[in-house]
Length: 567
Image 1: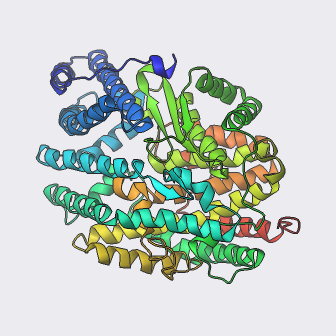
Image 2 (image 1 turned 180 degrees about the horizontal axis):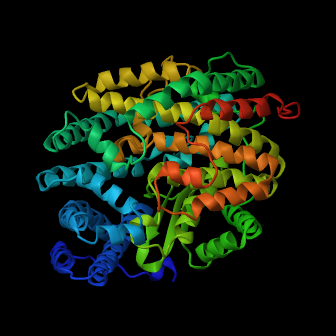
């Protein structure tokens, strides 16, 4: 079914609560596993329907944040979701206490109960008001960014539409674009500070109401950290500083030499990889989709079926338009057994990357769409990011169709981008640990902490105040996840470490690499992240010298990459 034909309805909290209570009672009074399973399957059907309606409202709202109907529906779900969570928790308690738990584990897997126990630690009826306020504040942040109208060269642009100017080969024009965007953030910084300060204190209250010293343990449980903990993340963080940062420094030193600049460089110059311009996709957005279609039809029968479904049923909204929420994502529309891809094309290499990245998420969702219960369709988020980041590397096989004459630039840029991202992503996570362990930091003190971390993780960034907001070390406020999904960022770094293992395999044998990818992806969310990796013959980012080996392999490739004809 085409996306525009999917029917939306607001579901009342009262009707959901009534149905949940009935099914909880049925589970508790079940005399046989068959009776208990019937209740289990009924609750899964209900969850799918509620999730579908919430997803449809959210997607349509993000496509046009000025649409009054879906703006009201988004507000409704922001307030309804915490109330629905209260009844869902009662079901979770009943399932954990069920005398048929052993039978459920044997048929549906133990991860169902592992994650259920984590979920119980994230909620109490006492925090419903805080959860509602949290949703409202995140929506306000998203609305603020979507409303951006940045004057530049006689025109007015959204944040996403500014990106091509920020990558322009002309030094003066590129710097002017960075300054224009930075000024918009500076002009709105008081509101950005206010929203984040409220979110931090609100989440700190949630943590304390749930019996903790701060929000951090709740944040970990929300992110389903079901096979590693804070100590593992700190160990990974140390490895990033030891192995990845030096490789990234070398990348930017080479870049400065190519550009005729002095290292370290400004944000505007770091954004310019080649004097002749960064790699750009050839053709129109339609041409990018066509190239993606060719890639997926070539890659496997499964990917061919998946991507043609996405095209035929118009399940992608890719262009950057006024009033549209920024960024890109993949959403599940459970009742229709389909994913949906949202993006903001802006005529940069990011268009290809977001296309293949979100299609990686969508392919996994489509491949596992019939799994029961719904929550085992996809794994925890760091595991999900492996699907997407690795898919980007598989799509490099069609670099010439995507980029034409810029294909060679892109292959270099994509690998260096993957490596240099890991320090940034780790810095985002490190910053959030500092913030939630010290919730009473002032906005100015938070900015100072971020600036300090830049010196550790991004020493190639020159902080001289020349570019408003960015060069002042305040650019964390443009990172959506910091506001909306606390602690959802180290996931990208762990996933990129795994994705680089796939990149290494692809250099040796694309088809063998794909077998490992399918072995990983076809498991859906049936087991925890580290088990998914083990089952697919991959190394965990937390094991031994995993990150060291990944860096050494990629660094050797870059050292031998012929840049002589890339000005």
